[in-house]
Length: 164
Image 1 (cartoon, one colour):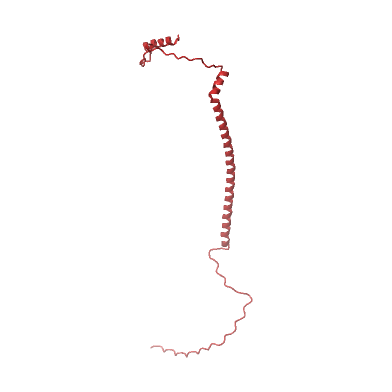
Image 2 (cartoon, helix red, strand yellow; image 1 turned 45 degrees about the vertical axis):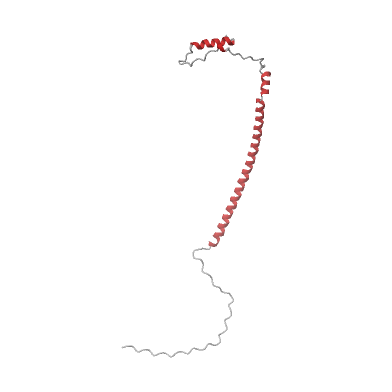
């Protein structure tokens, strides 16, 4: 037993489209669609990036000024050191000239004559013992005492030289 099927409904006749009604006059205020706000950014999200960039720029400028000030200070120090080095170089050259003048043989001879009263010797005579009287070279002492022949040899040299 089946239930009877409902009778089909008659199809509605579609009305023919006619002229459309005139659009309504625009409202006095203009309306627009507002985008959804970002989920994670707060109100201050748009201000953080420019503030951080300005802070980084200020820090970089401060660093450049500090580096320039240090460089200028070191330049003054370098100029002072160069001036002092040139003065020391001049003093060194003056002292070298003074040492060269003091070491000159003519100055040493003049100082020896004038201040010390020294005189140049007359003719210098070198004496050499005759070949027959030359003593033989003594042997190296073994016990630290002079050998008997060495004393006799020195006595001969003294006689030849005229020493007592």
